Figure 1 (cartoon, one colour):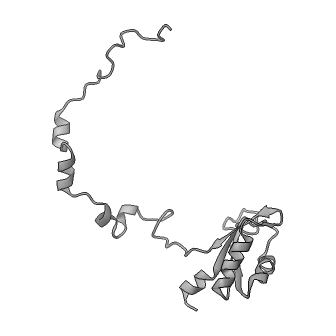
Figure 2 (cartoon, one colour):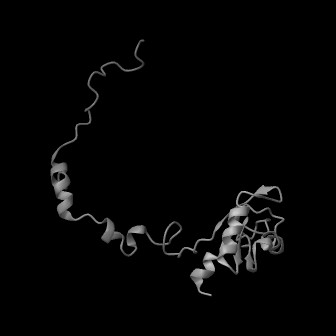
Figure 3 (cartoon, one colour):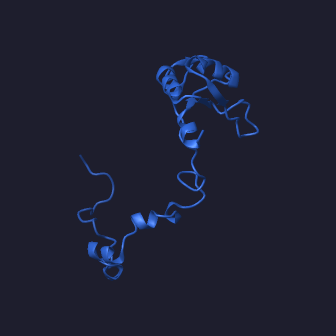
Length: 153
């Protein structure tokens, strides 16, 4: 099974109660089809008393079973909590998007897509030299304010 087809038959289940474990999650989704794997990520913080992070993944053998599970179980209740069930998304690369260790503008293609040429910068407004030549008046906008304090009504 290829990674892309495997991902398509995997669902994401969020809002899990702390009492839910792999076996319970498998039993809940078993009526929808053959389950290949159930994963509930453990809490990353060593000081956490929670057994898991509140979400999990269920991988079905058949894509249609995963879609049926999503249609029937999304916004249903499990152990007194409403769960969200959706198609699983691919895990983000550590070098892209939020949480990345590199700046967005350092990624390939960003400058090609968003860079502004020097010609465009000059054509859209005054250059830096022109802006520096115009002194800014610190009193501008204070005309008519000759009395300090609250104004009488």
